[in-house]
Image 1 (cartoon, one colour):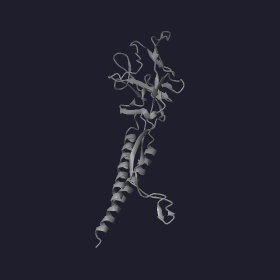
Image 2 (cartoon, rainbow, N blue to C red; image 1 turned 60 degrees about the vertical axis):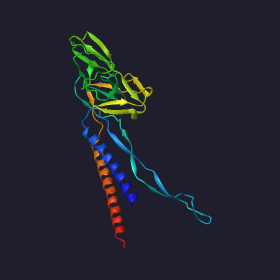
Image 3 (cartoon, helix red, strand yellow; image 1 turned 30 degrees about the horizontal axis):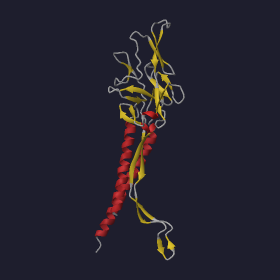
Image 4 (cartoon, rainbow, N blue to C red; image 1 turned 120 degrees about the vertical axis):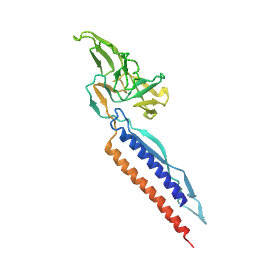
Amino acid sequence: MSRALYTAATGMHAQQLKIDVIANNLSNVNTDGFKRSRAEFQDLIYQNLRTAGAATGVDLTAPVGVQVGLGVRPAATARNFEQGDMKSTSNALDVAIEGSGMFQVQLPSSETVFTRNGSFKVDPEGRLVTNDGYPLEPSIVIPRDAVEVTIGLDGVVTARMDESGENMVELGQITLADAVNEGGFESIGRNLFRFVGGSDALRVGVPGSEGFGNLAQGFLEASNVKVVEEMIAMISGQRAYEANSKVIQTADQMMEETNRLR
């Protein structure tokens, strides 16, 4: 019975973590470029009360063993990088990725991090930056007298310098980064990811090339959180939590009955 108490407690801790992950997903349902997570679990070690093949008598062996599991533990919080819905903003500096890849952003520490949120702004130096002021990498500088900025499917950024449209200046090209192991991207907040899977596993390329998606100017990628699925998972987690708490109550009642024996 004591074993049941501790085993059920691990189940309650596991379901609490599941609800925590769901809560974070739902709180970011309107965060552009957000990728939902899923809690994954694995069973703990087992106590072998009898092994299969053990002798049970003269020339007799047990066909199956007796094992008692000791609960569950969190194994991972896997992030789902499925494409989110595209929403039109009509803002020339809003860019969405149709397919695989991430924008590269440089932190003040010179570290390169990654994001799917293409809501860019222009800082006082004319650079394309994120909402937190982190510049896009490679750097794109918009001239102050530019009349219009165009970002192509392949990431080429051009500026129209006069109303006639004859004076077009190429400002640079936006590149994307991706990895075969998407689990190597670790969220660090502010819509940013750090790649911890090893630099040799990271690929950098031109939008539209093999393995990379196209860019869509005037669009943003919405969060890929599906509210209905999260609500179903939340109900499932709540019921599992209740079931584990019921096990603890039942084990406690059994111990109480044992203590009453004369």
